[in-house]
Image 1: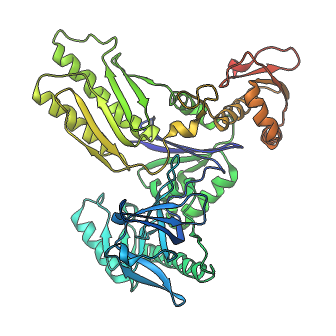
Image 2: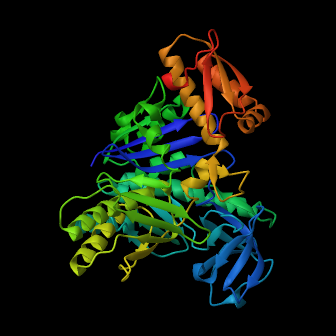
Image 3: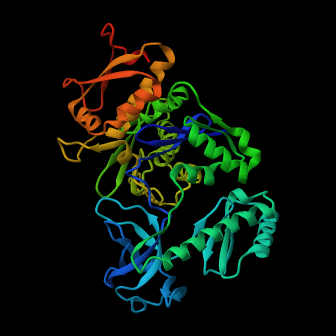
Length: 496
């Protein structure tokens, strides 16, 4: 399988696309206002103990309190008499209002729910994860070779710092002991910085460790020898990635490339795919299709045979569509970052062996997913229930805003995604023409946003050496824009 990573920077967003065999399988977006807190460590204050909910609400120094379930508390680290100390949790009696403990975010805040927390602190590095006050050695389950697992465990035993646990990551497979040792040294430095931050906090709730940015996390966790290339269209980020890889995996440095001309995502067919992510209907090659809907409680996916007629044997036709749907649904779950409770309505089948084959195929495809999943068997009505781990918001919420007309029953393209499309269009336009002045027509909603954030258009004009005159065009939809060539008012929107 050929895997490639593409990283694009625009004035409003960072976007990352993961391609497998030229097919988009994962897509990430990060804006300055919507940075994930997953992995961050907070010196937090016990705000409210809810025994009936088996949970504690923690003051993190943020707008929302964090939610710490009793199931996420085993040992915890508290600050007493000027130093950090481990404590064993046996029940609510071990916690007191106003008490200070270390917690780590495992899930971002969602709607009116605060971040989900754990007391099991884990500091991730390139080759290992450091677990303070845990006497444990773990090897990634994805390393299957028993001989290699034994070798890595031997290395971990020889370099494990006293008072810390170590989990060896998949990318450590084949690495030398000195490389893993250097990684752990850097992790210990991060822990020392946490300790200093706690001591200097004045017993105020605050963040004491910030996890890597989205781009850094993807490069750290996913850029392995299986990746053919990493292509970046921002020079500063390209150099930063080169420098990091040169330190931790110099043999991969030559696989990092800088994209100079035109839109990176358009050049590799990614824009065409991301434009489909807000559509309810997903077509299958056979002519069947999926319908993906979201409710407050769950995602619902319906499988339809559509135009497919296939063979005369109806059961074989249905099995073919269902198997194709299973592969595509697994991809869409990763791609759209769909999580929580998911109900899938496959087309009814009669033969038990076919049902088993469908579930088996679906589970095999889900094994490619980095998120944890749990899958039930097919019910008598052809329904399959499953859950998928939620770490960040579904891509639907990153790519769209609440519709101001229906207040959430429908979605419109987000302002940030519209800016990204405009920036991409201008980049392609300047690659193909010497024209340096255009008129941009937009809906009043988008016009007001750009006017309020003047630097957005200014940055695009400066970056590509072009003058853009923006005007309101009320006939355009909220998710549309139109470019006219200034000298003759010709519509050039679809020409580039």
